[in-house]
Image (cartoon, rainbow, N blue to C red):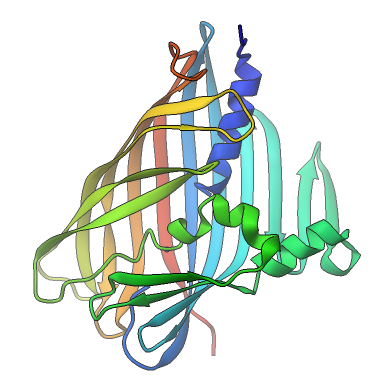
Length: 289
C-alpha cells in the first residue's frame, strides 16, 4: 500500500504550480513583450489535515512577430513556493543566471560558471526561439512548429508555450461575442482544457474591454515517475482582458480561477483533495525609448 504524507503531496503540488508557471498583431515586423504573474492559493486536505500551499510565479516572454508568424522567446521565470507559512522554493531563472534564496542565503550561478547541463537549459530556454506559430487574420493558431533545442525540453513539457498563449485568444472585430478553445498548464504534462467565452463591454476609451468566462477540465493525468494521479480537475475562469485595436494585440488582463482537483494512487479512492484560487495578471511591457 502506498502511503501519502502531506509533505510529499505538497511538494508534488508545488512542482505543479511552478509552471502555472500567452499573440495577435497586424502586418509587419515587431516585438511585443509581456509579463504574466500567477498567484496560487490552494488548501490541501490530506490524511485528516488541512494545509495551505502558496505559489507566486512571474513569467516574462516576448512574441517576435513578422506578418502572421509569431516566434516565442522566454525572458524570465521566477517562482516562490510557501507550504504552511514556510518558504520551500524561491528561484529566478534567465539567460544570464540562476538565482536561489534558501534560509535567507542567496546563491547565484552565472551562465558562464554553470555546469554544462544547467548552461544548456539556460541557453536553450531563455533568449532562444522556442516555437513558431502561424495565425490567421483573427489571431487563431493554424500551425505550430517547435524550434527549441534539447536544453529547453523539460520546461517545454511543463507548458510554457500554452501559458504564453493563454492571454492571446482570437479577437473578432466584427462580433460582440465569441468563444475559443483554451488550455492552461498544470505542470507535469497536465493541462486544463476547454472553451472560454469572450464578450465585449460597450464603450471603452483606452482599448476594447472583453469579459472572459468558462470552465476548463481534465479527467486525469499521472505525475511522471510518481505514483500520483491528478483527476477531476475543474478550473472555473472569470475575468477580463483589453484589446488595443490600434496596435492590433491584447495588452492586459486579469483572470480569477476557482480551482479544485483530487490526488490519488491510480484509480483508487482519493488520498488528498485541493481547492482554492489562482489569480493571473497579464500586462504588456512597453520598451522605453
